[in-house]
Length: 304
Image (cartoon, rainbow, N blue to C red; front, side):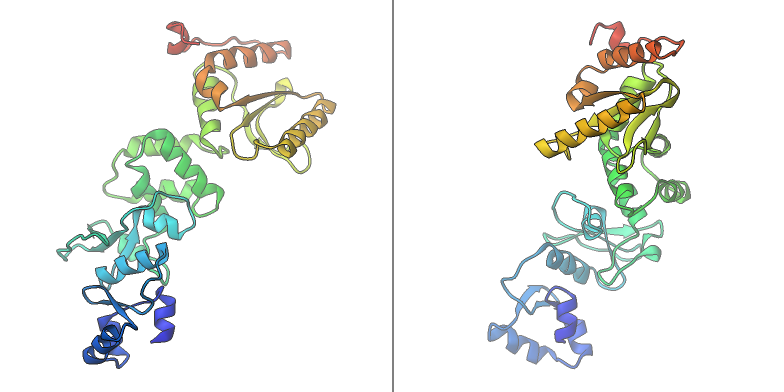
């Protein structure tokens, strides 16, 4: 019993307790004496007063009964992604009539998520959880989720594409497949915004992404034929003096290789993409690019 409770963040169901030889009368005595508490109907807390996200997730699963599995943001948090806290979502078989509560949002699974569940704390597959959450997000938020999950090697772009293709129903299927097709080599929403709003929207040549130009570093975008690097500095990793000096040192090493570096932040890419595109195009032309930028709708309306 102690081993089971430890594995389940201090929680045991009445059914589990009975299977281990602890009857209802003994469980009620433990509750009356203050050793245990009733977490919800049919679930006991062997560590009253000790709260944690893991305990919240286990409570939702034990409420769901066997078989069931965590889904949505709760499943992604179990996988190590930073997601908003909230009431855990639990998937149960389609033939049940579950009731949600303050502890758990119960949903009936009609597309086979439970057949792919994983883990001691049962959760749907990483791919199912990512797609379930992404199909309700704004495109840029979906990009952030995809890139975060891929960067942490929880999923791959290919496995997500396969999951979307295999499902009978996916909300915003076309949009999700388009985003997944665009994300090769992209590791942040800023890189995605640069490709979409600067490079593609203005007809610039397509750069290579996440290229190792010098030892110990990767560059966000390399226009190899024209000797130009574009580095995109989001907040993470670029907020202290050490990071700034590291960037300067890398830019100097690249200059020794006859590579020019242009560096932009979020305010540049998202706030003035047309101006960024003109500057990138200007450097590309100096290095031999025969093209010219294509005005985007933002340019046409004078929004610089």
